[in-house]
Amino acid sequence: GHVVVARSAGVVRLPARFLMVLAANPCPCGRHTLSGAGCECPPASVRRYQARLSGPLLDRVDLRVAVDPVKRADLMGQGGRGESTATVAARVREARVRAAERLAGTPWTTNSEVPGHELRTRLVAAPGALVAAERDMERGLLTARGLDRVLRVAWTVADLRGAGRPDASDIAVALELRTGIPRGAPMTAGAA
Image: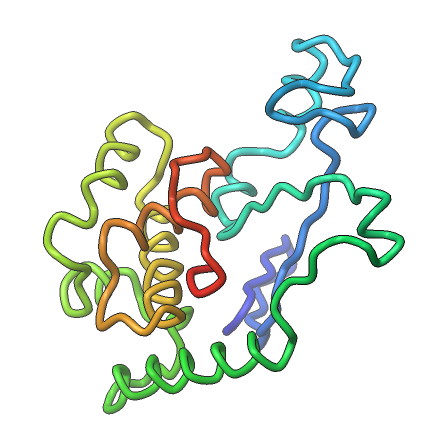
């Protein structure tokens, strides 16, 4: 809820509540996919291009979503339709009510506000749910800050599907959203 600006003349603490959204092409030509189809960039060029975003910056990004190119059928309105906005909005309202009820009596009202310590000690996930996240920490794919952010997202995923607390599948969805590494997590309409 605040930002600290430190300069040689002094330090100022300012109120700040914002949602940071970043967008980037996956490579210089913009056509790189996991399968490599359509991209003509050499692998070294792709790595160099992606390395321009620093690790500390990416560690502060909670969700990473790869967006597939739009197909002609979708542009022409012939593609399949997803859920209606009203349906998704109703599910989000229900999830927010669930979170607010769980957090009643605390200084927080949403999952994003809960400190990491509370997520690890008081609002714990289901037994065994964190095995994959712990493995990622041991492999260096996830930092302590990243684990806290995965837990916040996992609580939101659990709230969206109407669960009492996150289980291993919710953690898998949150890890996939955090790292961008496919994990076979069920990304159903009720879980994303």
